[in-house]
Length: 75
Image (cartoon, rainbow, N blue to C red):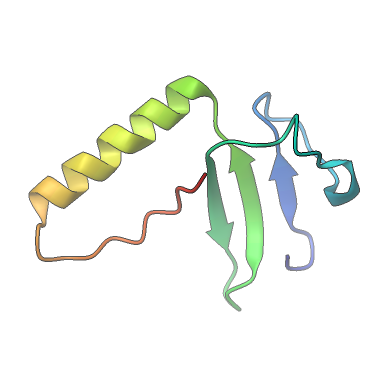
């Protein structure tokens, strides 16, 4: 994680890395990298946001079948 990086939970509250636990902080996330390629921001997604992200991924793949998308969406 880069300098000034942020982790936000499903309620959009800041979470410090030592406070991350497997039970409370698992699921799908979106992330943003800085200009150096380091993790800058990470968001844990709500179930609704997860569903929207999956639909977005399907739409992008349908619009551009030849292009490989690197959608920051992981479990």
